Image (tube, rainbow, N blue to C red; front, side):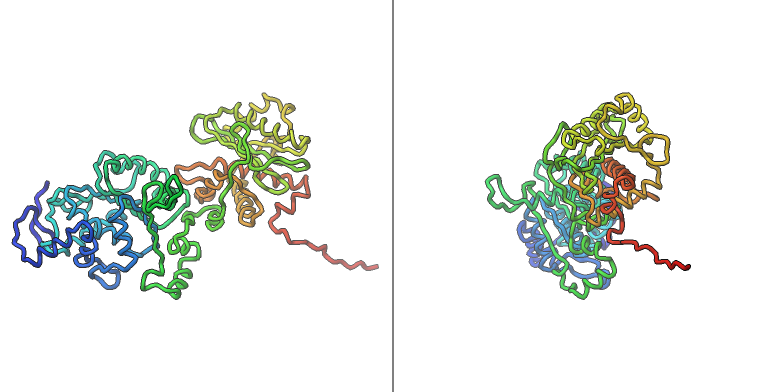
Length: 516
């Protein structure tokens, strides 16, 4: 370990000191394994208040419950509004744990480097304010880690797939976990869980983001508190204790404050960051509040790997769109089936290992299943996205024989090539129409998988695409269906009412005067 220079800020390691009886009594109270954390934080934990400066931390009642949860449960997950002291409370508890639980390895993981360094700064500031008769000596003292002479250490890191791998962690603290990229958060938790299996503790805190990320999954599991016989338990089915606080528990916040914040933040951000609702933070195509309401349903039945959410009916028009892929395990191929008369999703298929001929065969099977009920191939329309790999799908359809497919191959008007080409302009137009139909409750979405993709379908440059690490094939096949429905409006006037932007607008003929 590097040598530590004696300063007023830190205590030298392994130093011999004479304490008074009063100092020993205070140390014993801090070291108490039951009440020690609260006593230490109430008497020796100093913080930097943004307006009041240096002050002793006296936890509010909801913060006392939070500290109790940190200390008394092996796994805890806390969902709290912004700026209610969750990180500050954690910093105080981590410092206590390092100084009074010898030989501990504490990992601080935050979704950004600046986040982890901010927590470490709070820990260092608090440590420098603790009197020598309470604090442990340090053997290493820098921005990234603190090593104490009792064998404990605090290490900070940005949350990645491999953060903490190979470490023997006594206590993990993951801050703002909902804002770690979903694929990274899932891999991180998969990687870190075995290191905690030998008895380590985990503290996870965040304001909410998506209702499908790793934080949300852990939170939901923590709130399912029943054993296999239906009896209530103190922790969730995943072993986590859930803790929840509310903005009005802070003594400085009232309804006047809330009105000001709603005006400053907007209703959506206030609901997410203060009311702790799972409203997505990203610039999604569909309004976050609408995505919050979309749930999806279980399939009614399946034909092979095709999920059917509604049975086909006679005298209805059906639209089937295929977004093809190579089928090599990367991006999936996807098929969407919508009932044109009601613009309701009735079936869906997605697979990332099916080759092009199999994708076409699945398309044909879906159309055949529809025609078994409809008994009218003229009421079934199908198409494919013909960009790049779509050429292979067109060749496969030609080899199968359009005459053998019980539907009409719909193509983009004004083009000589079959199918629909997705350049930026028609894609944006389809995105706008999809957004309007969903938000006006005229497009019925039944698939949970499609809802999930819509939650990660975000602004990307001058267009929209899946967030990094996510997929958007179900959305793209739905956009293809939207473009097909727009074409069908010209051939089926009865579809116009459901599809047009201004349903209640009736354009009256202009008056005219005839003179003789």
